[in-house]
Length: 279
Image 1 (spheres, rainbow, N blue to C red):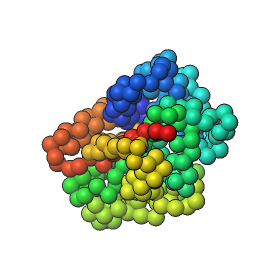
Image 2 (image 1 turned 90 degrees about the vertical axis):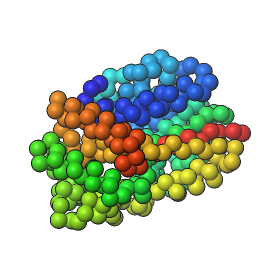
Image 3 (image 1 turned 180 degrees about the horizontal axis):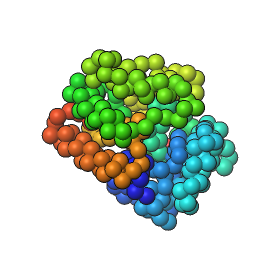
């Protein structure tokens, strides 16, 4: 598990396993990952925690669930929306529900969070790994595009599959330096970027915060851990080739991003929300 698809998750894997250890969950921890995609994070987590965690991972895409099976780990993968899970079978059955870069895609947001609340055991936690794209500024955008432009010039990035014409178009637009300053190019990346069930824009962090507070209440003691790495994973999202060079480059850029955040060169875009169910 050393491809770029796994390496991108290393910082959050460390954060998440430390978080789990801070709670007194009975082993094995019953965990549901919502929007698991091709399953790289759930596979990493199972590989690290082994029998200490029992993972069910869901995604709406049949293609992604098919990819999940290739990890050869003892996780349960289901093609489903969280709202469609059978309450008679799953109500109050999970210690942890994880949205790894997926909650901002869920629409309607409140209904998603309400269903997660139903599926959690009392004292269970919802964890949402997110990104505060509003924290991007000229300094962080310049840092990001200095690296992506160099990787593109060196032929270390590849566009999405040709069957997704709109994604290919957006990919080429991303690297068009005539589109403006690095910050303007970042803004263009998310302009009219629709990726949700009902065609709405991606939910910003303030809406996620409001929804979690509304559903879990003040007793939920919502916590946010911000200033985390995120931009390095965007390199993988935008086609960093899974070569030995790609792996080495990603490790270095992850380290550079961590150092830039530590030095205060820019604020990290990564943010993780944690809220607990109390009935």
